[in-house]
Image (cartoon, rainbow, N blue to C red):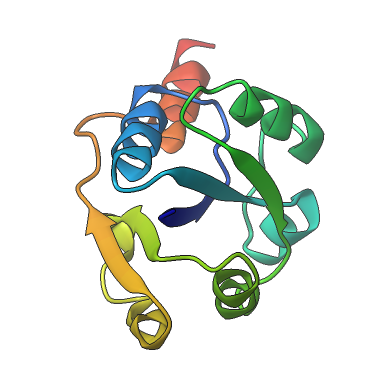
Length: 130
């Protein structure tokens, strides 16, 4: 069995997220999503519209996702790869090069982002409409 892992905040789930999850799942048999906790988002200076618990429920409903785990800090990725016997680590190409050190433990792939969509764009558009 090939296990794939990806990480993110996945706030305001949109088609770009779905494309990433679908492409990641196509690379293996089992997709794990490390979902940033609310406390970790605070450390990253990010604010989510939805709580961790709500984002987790939403992600668990996506057919490509097999397991959602909490992402509590930057350093846990290596431990997760070893704990879950991960074959491939997948992130959007906006992170290209940032996780290359994980190649010592598994394959690392950076996928192209879906053009013209992001949670930030959605939030900015909502603010402009108010």
